[in-house]
Length: 207
Length: 224
Image 1 (cartoon, rainbow over the protein chains, first blue to last red):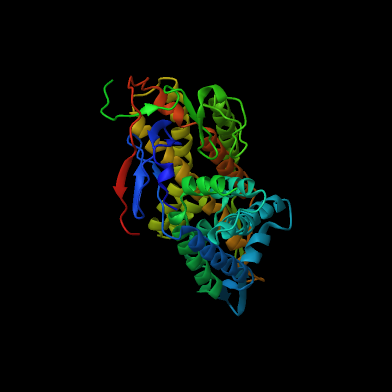
Image 2: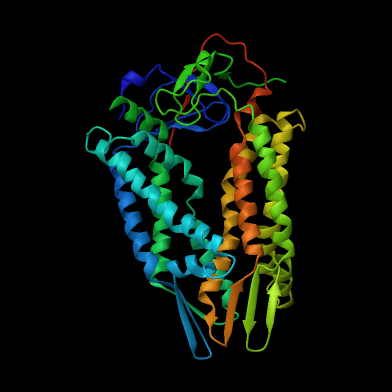
């Protein structure tokens, strides 16, 4: 993705509005704002195809974790297992059903939607095709949804719930818990690979 | 105030960047849609502070009932209890679980209050209140944005517990109304932080008089 044509182009730090001329970093290097140290450009080799691969992985993990047990407890002969779906539906009955919708959106719908959007935007470009129609709008939505994708927070919540329940009953971790742990790592890797400046540039160049 | 960094703001150089996609335009294009992503171009979000204060206020308003009403209803064979966030932590202390109690108090009481204070401080600092340098305020802002989402963990714990602990007569847990108000408080505080235009922090430095536009620093990235 490194092209000398971008050298000398203007770039503005999104956080502090400092203006710079682009000096395109090599792979493994990054361009950083001098005054607020925000990373401006961080190109990675084969970033697009790798991001798409990680998105596919993520989708599979979320769908599997949706229905497999997550935590299991037992006490006095009674036992119960919870899947991601059950946690979403925990508030479904009664006046707190709005919360069910919100939890479902934050831990399942938004993460899955972001994965689908990233595949839609990046997969064609990863294979040197033209971007699909409305790719820019899709990438905009992908970025806007970032803070609202909370699967990794949910995983930590499981840990806390485990500690809280252990006084009340015996708890076991289910297979879906480990899948979600993998998902957290994959999300971190993906964020690390994503250079928004490069992707916006590629979207513009290949229209 | 002296500062050693060689930076010139896009605004004083007669440019502006699209807030969505980062494309650079002349300042005279302000108000037009971005030719790359269609977002309306703004050099600064002039209504940023109004939006911050509006979200901040509803966030605080939701946080009050979140602490007064029960978060969890626990029913076991021997007794039923309704616990607010603070009462739950105190109950844990009586059991001797000081570590967990402190973590819960920090996560559910300390961090939300610190966030309210930090957002209010950032909004006031743009108006000249406080002495923190722009660099430190930028860090504070990034910290608030990063930590904000993590407060949702309390709501997820309630959801997990309510789904998991359904053991017929032996024990059951159901959510209390505070789960909803707490979730709303977290969401509104996130929106308050997102509404803040961090470029305003740096405007208090005033314009650097400089003729040339510098290159950004290039750093070797440590392998992840």
